[in-house]
Image 1 (cartoon, rainbow, N blue to C red):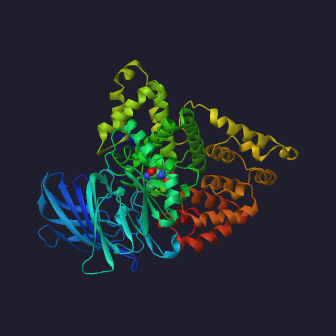
Image 2: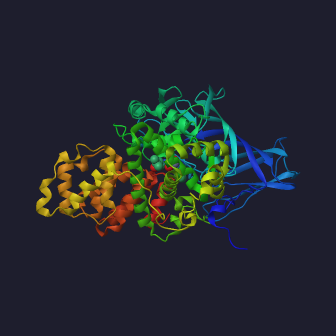
Image 3: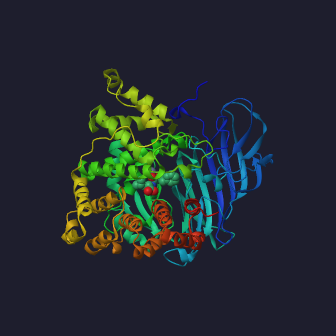
Length: 621
Ligand code: BES
Ligand code: ZN
């Protein structure tokens, strides 16, 4: 039989669980947070539903968990084995035998008594020195894509959706939050030093959306259903930065339908948080590098808000269909920005995304299978496959289709209907395409989609077969100024002044710098002249610093290397840290310092980030 092409694949290669036979309907956690031992310990109760006749066991994903025992509902011990799969990113499956074989539609529960490892890949334990307040320790999780298994024994697959409840016990000076509604808190009667927080997530979610944070957290109301949470040192600045949250939510509701999660809060994490943002339901996690002081980087909030529909309600069936989550979310993020700042801004963001895609594909090499929109992930750790491709190739495809069917007025009803049709479910790329064709039935008959080279979009590496037509009003100015810099001879460099950037938005400054990363490096003279006019060395905007340092490293400007090393040490957002470390590694005169800096700091870094950088720098684990 011929192999099915990637868009049809339904089997999840990144889980070891028997997801075809059993599913989880609810998870109840009772966990004790121990900052001394750096562990979570307690019980996970999983409510299971059987999907086929004669099922004898459930296999759960675990990674570096210590299992103390497994019991059934009636309190009897159940037999289990933890299979050891050496050094697999997928962990060690926990195989639990039911007391009797169970038939389709039967339900049962298992109680797993366990403890996490201090090295759990989902968790980062910070010392007080690593926090803003310097007084209390801090813990946060990052489960996407397959790290939940190091925190909770579960069916760690996006196709399995369950509700969850949790009781989390922490030192009483600290606050615990989760990706769920807060439903109560109380002192621990037997221990005056501890406090219990209770949570309930009533909407069924995949395991990768389970999240926890524990720290000296405070909050401020920023909207009718929203607060920002952070250490007290950041609360005011964060509240200012994310003032537009309710407007984003309301706009997203117009586009995608009602917000079903009740509350929408934002948590600003310590600087080592490895992503820009993470769409944990009810509580988006964001990096402090988005708090620029001028609201210029809040598209991250628009993005995570959009995930409340695309991703969290309608979910990719496996990580091979990740573009369904991220491509749609980028598309909706830019729709939100477009509604609030105009279509020209939306097109400008899309152009920026297209350039980011060019950059990404150039770095991977245009025949690399990781550049497929729908990659095959057999034996592949999703962290290794992660890139801008699903985001930008995916959203470019949607933009192209929008133009093809007749524009936003025609395409937006599809988006809304797609969310409504697949909410609370998961789907593959093939199912997405079927739904597109059903919705646009008449257009299919008119032959509107005949020109789309689906196979090229889905299953071939490199850039997409076609570039959508974006309005270039805002990007033209960035390109024109960057051309002038490229074309100026050494004696012409005095034509540039700080005023060149007067009419630029922060986004345009960022895009101006991005132009230089698409072509060969500037000379040292050019870089120094640019610094003299525009003073990028003293910028505090993380997106500007990121691009400026990359330009300077590529141009071999030694004075900037310490600043770049400082940047990758003071914050841990992978989007910034990995490319800068890679650029430093590629520069003979910086390689040794980069490796040294990494080795010195890796103990303080987030696990996910340090594992990736170790690979990038070819440093052993
Ligand atoms: N869900 C992602 C972050 C993620 C993806 C974590 C895969 C782990 C594995 C989140 O929504 C995201 O895309 N964040 C972006 C925001 C940007 C596109 C505005 C980021 O972190 O930069
Ligand atoms: Zn996202």
